[in-house]
Image 1: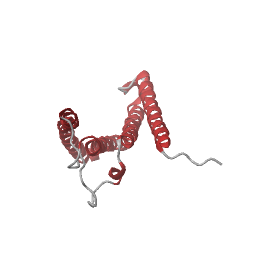
Image 2: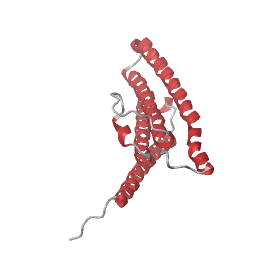
Image 3: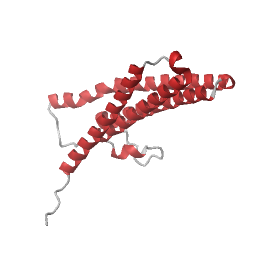
Image 4: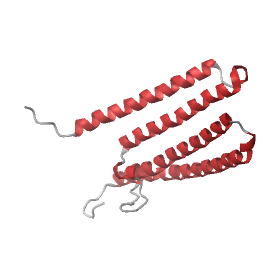
Length: 183
């Protein structure tokens, strides 16, 4: 803040309220730790039992690991991007490990990236469902036909939502650009 700009006490309080989000981001960091533990546990189980598992069961276990990684990536995007966008700058300029996407992150970009990550996670879950149905057979499956149908419908809604978010973002960004010269 510039030294010749002073905020009213109410404006200062409202602006400072963004720091109330800090415990939320710290909580997400703890959730990230839980996912690291879960990943290690699942990886240990896969390595320890690999000789007794079929190829399909190994594939399901690997998809479970990918799912954990994708959720963890989602957490990183929310933690880093959300903090940078809504709380305070991280001042990572010229840092060799600064994520490429962080240099142009804003609320709209973050929403589109989150929507795409959720679609990726949903895709992994749907693929796991289809593989498990094929592996277990129809009578041993824990999935009902209606359950699989709803999972597919929800996945399609995620895709449509992401398209809608991206389209709305594109419309809004075109509205802020300079009008083109008419011929």
